[in-house]
Length: 369
Image (cartoon, rainbow, N blue to C red; front, top):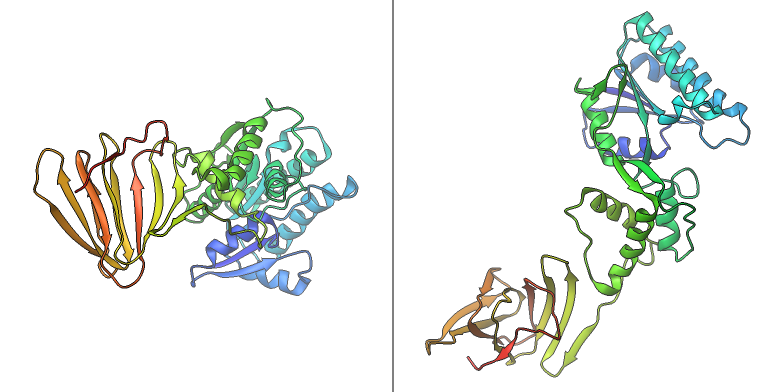
């Protein structure tokens, strides 16, 4: 399909183009402010679907609102009409189109000429009045508080929260792209004259700031945010996309002794924690049991044996493990257990426990297997 995308260098368009580019059947005409007239006419003549995403929202003077939002829309429609192109046209408007300000008036004017164009030519028109949009590649210190907060916090810069109780309506970029792709297949979420993205998050400004500050602390606490919360999951993904490129890495505290090392990797509030255990050749670790704490061991490098003995019995069970054959070994409660490195090099084991380690209540009792 030949797809025309205006505002191709913009936040929403970059995400849309990146997604559509996975399909080799799509030919995308990327229209920007520097695109010459000949290329624009070629795109309008051949387009089978039009995404009109270009717009102006932070001009140097108010007159540019109408020029960038209404006048360019009018020019685009006139070229489509010139080539008798009645392909569907989707435009991004704003919830501010309902407001009596220069930006809102310009977006409203653009909407009206698109509706008029659709009635005149019989073209399908899809007008999306979007609220605040957040996600990767959004420009900070422009018109997105989420982008600005993410940028500042990852750069260790202060943020300003004027009204923590102010509630924002937010849509995530991936939800927008999913909706736009549905619209290409005639499955748009239409509400009367307008279309909208189903998933809108209502979040207080203070909550956003607090979440982002907590995300920064996860490198120290190793606590993973609550990924069962849809907004938190999307916000965390967005936050990580703003990390400075020389700070993708961070250190972990390794507890090292002559036997090897033990390092906590990830923690969760309700799903336990993951650690990495390194054992030197010939070393045996463990020889303890738990009442309620249970674990899973996965040897990913080296070879060894995991031994078990039920507290009430003398029989010893053995499970031979190796990084050559990945398998998970459950560590049931009530069994004393140990793990011995039987290889020539270090043995590396990924260990999951169903609860966070609590030094006041470790639920770990010494007992030789």
